[in-house]
Image 1: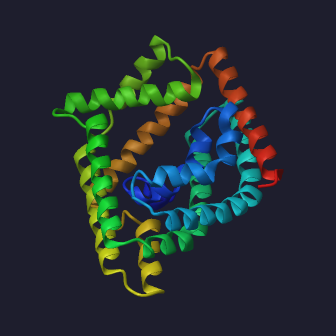
Image 2 (image 1 turned 90 degrees about the vertical axis):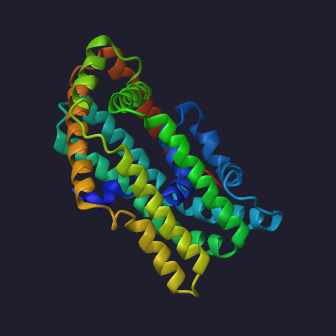
Length: 294
């Protein structure tokens, strides 16, 4: 397993901002996927306006850039997403193992990596056209995100943090499989209790990455140096993490994989049917979108 690949999204706020449109395809309800995708140029501009105060020219250039990337994404990536959704549907119907789950997670992360690498030239151009004031605004908004994330997932005591992590796990699994029963919640609590509390390390790591990003934005060296350094920040944002922290993250990941496999093993027929219908719906939507005219 490539630990860098799996850890990449942990604290890179910029990566999350620019991949929101793609990620929403996996999280949105199936009935809205096609509508959301076809409106994604406007959705992305609206979303980014929450981080930057863009002028009309910048908004127009950003919409054009999003459209260019979406055309590539529609033709080359959505058929892969459809095949992936159908494969996951088949996987859940059979015996699930941690090795198989890890393989599917690697594949899903690979989709995001492909999109990120393709989009990086446009991302570099976008940041180079921003003013110093807009960069400062972006950094301030990322810090607001940090505080909000800490409010949602942190806590004053280890007990509070564990409770919030459990609540987040319940919410995530419910979104995927539907309402959880008592046995399933008990299983999740048992596994979650065996995970390391890395909350403080995580927020420190996130902020450290953002400092490196801000330093690059302030300096903004000429091309190709700017793009090369931005690429390094986005592709390997964990390179400065403490090894002890990364070890704990990997151990937590192993526990999470085991928990997920165990949970899949006790899904009800209704939950399995719900998940299967969702995957089939995703696959149909992705296939339809891939052949539509943009």
